[in-house]
Length: 522
Ligand SMILES: [Zn+2]
Image (cartoon, rainbow, N blue to C red; front, side):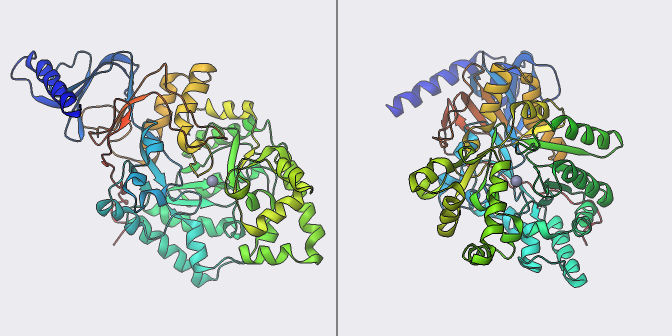
């Protein structure tokens, strides 16, 4: 059967190439007759020809001899999506070759993703970027060095300021990571121990990233009303960019929790003001009303997390702290919308809301959460954003699409597909052109990915071909690992990673090292 099909394909290819005028250079692949979104221009019906790993021609009737022709009539042809915020580092270094293909992303047309976000990026960026050479990966990736990883390595998990010597060591780690090709410095200031750092400490390290042309990518200190509040946390990120002299990207921008719902216009105004003053401020966003985090991070007050999980477990058993701990957790639960708005997505209680779990145990939600945290700290989906805030952020030309992919949340398998189906097609919040450019071009430009994010001659052939009638997420909170529908073909560096809607198994991704500013690394 397979042989017959191959023979038929060869015959078809011969028939197609035979009728093109001689003398025209042969392309390896011609994507013909699709609606082409280039990343720069208005869409048109036309062709994209590929030779090797690059785009050779783009245009109307760009007739060319080709070894293979894909009929893309009725399809959208666009730059492969670029996901600037993921947590797929482990997948890319997995021993399992199929895991390294990251099918959840390829099947949505994602051809490049960033790792090391939220302050978690491995400081050994050279090792991170070299692993693809020996363990091939399905998509391109670039890496941040993480403030959290650096602070843990140098200062530990305690709530204290670093000594001047420790600051020097942390700075040296940033410099070395930048010189090894990091995109910039990522931070997750909401999380302990990064939450213990004062603004000046981060400015010192971000200044080192700035010297090499890096960017500051931040999960801000407070997306809600936990500590300094959402607006002040955005101001802090902007101030870090201004003082350190580098662009800032605000990770997964949102107004988290009932206390800050409706604040999107206020936050947008602050960012717009900074942009007008000449700062480069952008943001990324995942298109879901639930965030994904851990149960303890969602509920336990920061003071009780000081010192790591061991210290937290001791405090859970400390009768003298019980009242303060319970009231802090109850307040955090209120901010997040109550026990029915927290869905456990991992471990023994997967699929239950905290309200359901508490009821089944005959306990109040806080006691139930404490009991679960004692045994493990499961991932949770926290339904804490309002649709008006989500769409207000999404309409901004400086907000790109991201997934914040972490296991247990459907955003791993469905973010780009959902944004298209829900916010482009069903609700018409943004146009298809906006969606295409903010899901690829904007990230390539913001983070300086040379030759990516546009369909233009000479660019790398990272391309998605999808069916505009079918492209949609199938993953849900109940079934978060269903592959997206509607992607027909995906090229990564000119190689078909998805063909006729199925993975080919070819791992054509590359590690994308950022080129440091000349002279910044000696
Ligand atoms: Zn984050």
